[in-house]
Image 1 (cartoon, rainbow, N blue to C red):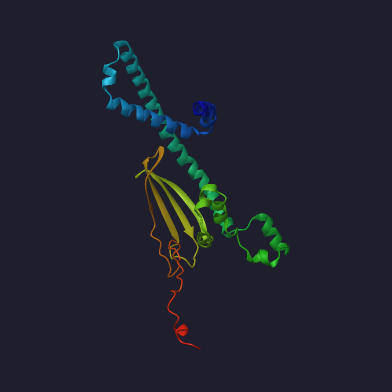
Image 2 (image 1 turned 180 degrees about the vertical axis):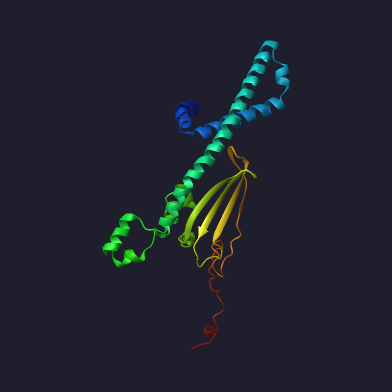
Amino acid sequence: MGNNKKEQLDMSDLSANLPAAAAALSAEDRAGLVNALKDKLQNLAGQHSDVLENLTPTVRKRVEVLRGIQSEHDEIEAKFFEERAALERKYQKLYEPLYSKRYDIVNGVVEVDGVKDEAETGATDDSAKEEKGVPDFWLTAMKTNEILAEEISERDEEALKYLKDIKWCRMDDPKGFKLEFFFDTNPFFKNSVLTKVYHMVDDDEPILEKAIGTTIEWLPGKCLTQKILKKKPKKGYNFSGAYPG
């Protein structure tokens, strides 16, 4: 009895939390959930076509009307994804000038007005004059992201300090997106750009098919993907102990 009561309490807690969990989903996540359920129902309908045959003519007619409503929904949804993709391309072009300005400031290509005025009046100290841009900008940005922070090791940090810029672009054929990581000259690898291409099963749903990355040209002894194993000296026979003093 005690166990059954506990299960009932757990179920009531779950029911109370479901609305909050659903509200926490983004519109895209909710759409993905609906599509997943729709696909599952369609698969079930294909596997169990005899279910419709067992329905009464009246109910079967209602189901056929529901199928028609779903088809209309699919047409509208397809239009939505088409317009959303066009909207993303439009705003991506509007973002690009801002990204260029960010690159110039982060990498010390240009100076911002306030600092420029101080430099002209001699108000800055020597250390500030030597320091260009925003050191470790991208490393700091990635470490403030909870998901990325877990993937960055102490060894990775040294290489990521040389990261100058990250660019993202959508791909239409094949469907997916591409990330480009631009690096300054560094003591770890020869590449100036590392690319990661993500192929998606469907551009409208975040289902990853495969990911292809650049082959990194590591400099001798600098590969960060290899684990460093320290060998302990083997214990041998102590010959000196074999002879009396």
